[in-house]
Image (cartoon, rainbow, N blue to C red; front, side, top):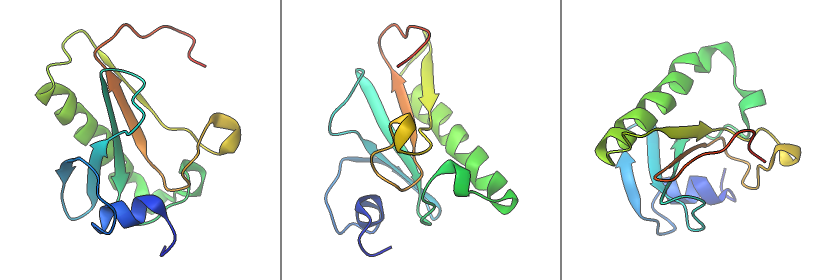
Length: 113
């Protein structure tokens, strides 16, 4: 989508601190981190939210988690990390391009939010 912030980041039209990219996925540092490690992992293809994903997106959704695990290992998050997907405004989604949050480097409490 031409007006989507994350699509623009993925297309290098808006600068961001990219930490991973391939033909399907890109990841960058959150500009308002909620933990010492806070990375957003996005599919290049615009999907508004998780609820809009289809069965054909299953492999891509799994790859988002695998990229999160790879980045967590690179960041030495040996004490643990959290991955989060907010689905819709009521869940806290503020940019409507599916993205996975990778959070780590501090103690995570339960329940969140």
